[in-house]
Structure formats: structure tokens, C-alpha cells
Image 1: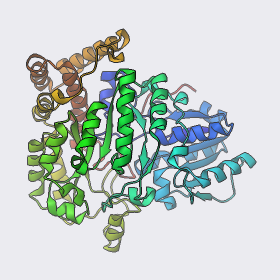
Image 2: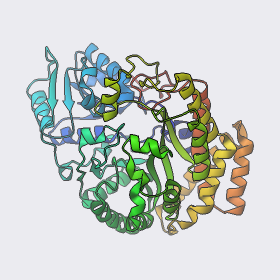
Image 3: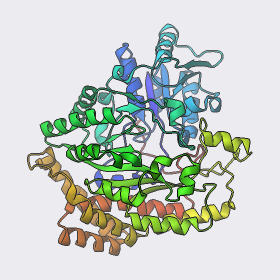
Image 4: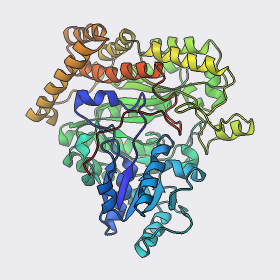
Length: 522
């Protein structure tokens, strides 16, 4: 079985321009593909994984395969269809699963078999079907999951089949589902509002496996909402604190959670002890009327700026999602958003135009109003905005240009270095981070940063202002490097976006062209 993960669309959040600085070739390992690979390997299949973010799928790969298994999100739709077509040219059965097909199976008439939903009874039925007959069916077959496999029964992802050392960070999933019902989000309908949980022992086993196969520096919890079940999150965090102490803090953790985490200071304290250094929060907009309309009232339980400062006080940087093109937006929204970015000192925001996803209340409302665009431009939103489209697009351009003007962005990173980083748990000198190999890699990253950001970059003057302040005033070389590595991507990607060379919404299902990864060898 050949498991293929399609090439991902570049975005503010993929950091692809930073790979050359840190020696990575892709962002995160494809968690879903790794789980499916582990499931079929446990049934006796020979399994290989191709992540097209690392290299192209080759004719040699396809000549080896008997079945091609693909998974992906809406933004990967074009690539999913291309992989399916290539599999068919080899007369191979193409099976598609994952979040995109689960939300919109009607978008995919081409694959031979569709797996709808999470790992469960349908996965077993699909495996039995393939083990009985590998030939392509005459008509498309669909396998919808009716009974999900409990997360505590999930296999350990097949990290041993992936080139884990090539990724910027590792990934782990501790839970699935979210109790909230934000209008634009498909998570509650796809994965449920009652969170399902892995055991802490499963997570620490996965972490051990990742370390053994080359994951270093950081691990990202891909949970829809890390605190969806606060009691389970606390149990897990207690185990993570112990695991970090036993292993001498080999990695930093990051996760996604709702802003109401500030109502759980016990969780924030444990996150600090476990070395969570970044928290991605869906702030979406600072405008209260917009949050009420999108049914994201959890962001209103405390003033947003106060909540951000609270999270920072535990040594955790806040990163944020941001949406423009909402029905409540006015021509003044864009300037107010810029003021919020400056006041919040959030250094990294993924700023997207509103996109209506299938299986969401937003899709159903806009469809009823006749406001879903059938053929938006590549990488563009599928929403017919209430404001004139030029006003929305130009407003988005204004916000991203403001957010990632180099001096302004580096000032927000310096704010974090001065106000957030001092609250972090200190890593002992016995940590693997200080082994000779790690220090050598750190020296290479430093050299790359100085060359690309300090000498070659058009923003080099702003870089040196940030770097000298971080090093001489704050004595924080790690913070300086992170600001440089992240900032290089954000500044470069913004320049491309302002030239219409990127998508305006990460969730678009049609994409502009982008540079390909290096080719595999046929």
C-alpha cells in the first residue's frame, strides 16, 4: 500500500520560507496518513509513505504499489485529484479518505473508493474489501464510518515510515472534537462536540517514538481544542510535566485552544511547567458584534487584550487566527484590526478572507442566501461578501502589509522577548538541547540567519535593530533566532501575497501555482 499526502498550499502558517534557515524540508508530518499507515501495517500490509511536501510522487513509487491511499484537506483538492489520475494511469485502485472527502464526498467522483469519517468500522470494512480484491471497482464504493474507533485504541502513528528528521516539528493528537459551535467551523459536525480522548500513556509513548525517529525541538498538538475537556487536559499535562523532567526537556510544545483557557489558571501553570511556549488561539476578530454573530462567545468571557496578557504571563506566546470579510465588517474594520494587532503584540497571525466550508452553519446560511460563489478565482474566497469585493480584498492587503511591515513585526517579537520569555521555565544544561550535535545545528541556523536575514534580505536593517536589542539588552539568542526564522517567512510571504502570488484564504479548494518540492528519483 502506497500512502500519499498531497503537496500543501503555502500560507502564513506553513513557514515554508523558513525551511532553508533551519534545515527542514516540510512543516509537520501528516498525522492522519501516519495513523492509516500504522493501521494497515498492523494487518500485514507492506506500506510506504510519500509526503509530496518532501518530494514528488514518482513512477517508481506507483510501479511498486498495489493500492494508493490518499488523504487531504480542501486546500489540497487539486493535488488529490492529480494523484488519483496518476494512480489510474497505472490501473491502481485509488482510495481517498481524510477531512476533505469526509466533508464533501460529492467533490470527489474520481477515486475508486471513499472512506468517510474517522478511523472505525468503515476502515475495517475497507481493509477487508481490499484484502479480498485489489482490482478497481466498476463504480465508486463508499465506506462511511458509523462507529468510530475509540482514540485510546488508535495505533501509534507510523513515524518509522516517515522521514521525520526532515520536518520543522513533530505532531501528536491527544483528542478529537470541540464543544463549541462557531458558525464557520466544520469540526463539531465532522468530529463531534463531545471530545474523545487518548490516554496520557499513549501520548508519552508517541513522544518517545518521535524522539527515537528524529523529531527534535518542537511538538505540536494538532487537537481541535486542547482544552475541549479541561479535566482530561489537566491529566495529560501532569504526565507531560513528568515526561519532560524525565527526558530533561528535549522539546517545546505548542497547541491550539480557545481563549477561555484563561479561566483555567491551573492548566496554564501546568503548561508552563511542561514547556508549552506557543498557543494558537482563534481570536478571529476583535469586534464583539462579529464574535456574537459567528457564535464565538467564548472569546467574550474576558477582555481579549487582558486574556492575551494573562497567557503571556505564563511564558506562552499567543499566535492567532484572523478572519476578514465577515458580514459585520465595515470599511473601518481594517484600521481597527491594525490597531488591535499593535495593542495585542501578537507577533504571528494567520490572516485570511472568510471561506465557507461544507458542513458548517455558515455554508448553509450563505447557500440559502445565494452567496456561495461556484467558481472563485484560484486561492480566493468562495463568499459573496456584503461589502464590495475590492473593499474586502484591499482591506486584507492593508492589514497584512501593516502586520508584517518588518520593523513593526520585529517590535512585537521584541515585546515577547521582554515580557513573555522571562516567565518561561528554564531548561537545565543537562538537556539534549545542549548536546554537541544540537549546538552544532544551532550554529548552522545562526549562520543561515545572519546570511539570509542580516546580509541578503531587503529588510536587513530592521533585522539588525531587532537582533542587537534581543542580544545586547535582553541576552536572548534563542528568542532572536525564533523572531528571525519566523519573521523571514512572514515578511517574504506577505510580499508574495501583496503581488497576488498566494491564496487569500488558506481553506480555498482551488489554488494558485507555487514552487514544487525537490523531485524524487525515478
